[in-house]
Image (cartoon, rainbow, N blue to C red; front, top):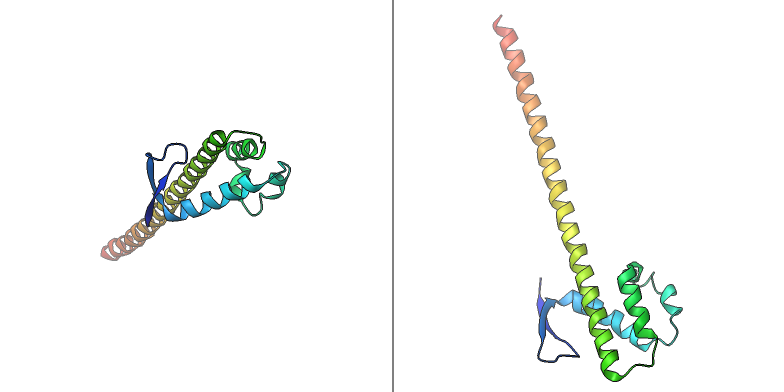
Length: 131
């Protein structure tokens, strides 16, 4: 997975290395919310942006839509929303990896069980032939 550097708006000396697709998705959401004038519009956006179904992200987005704030406060809210989205994306990816590993382990166990049963059956047949 390709990573890129993201520079925080509130602390430009602070650089965070994140996966490129996280930056694209989080950046798109922050931009959309920053341009929004009516907080009720967020309720209609959850189809296009499923991450808005997460209460923390929705609350952060709602704060960003409710001006007036100073430029510094807006940048702080944008950074917070961006980082929350990236964190949620990372959690989602880790969950998918764990589920995939669990599914793989289950399949391997099932295959081992099938193999063991096949060996047990063939050994029983063999032993009964000896009698």
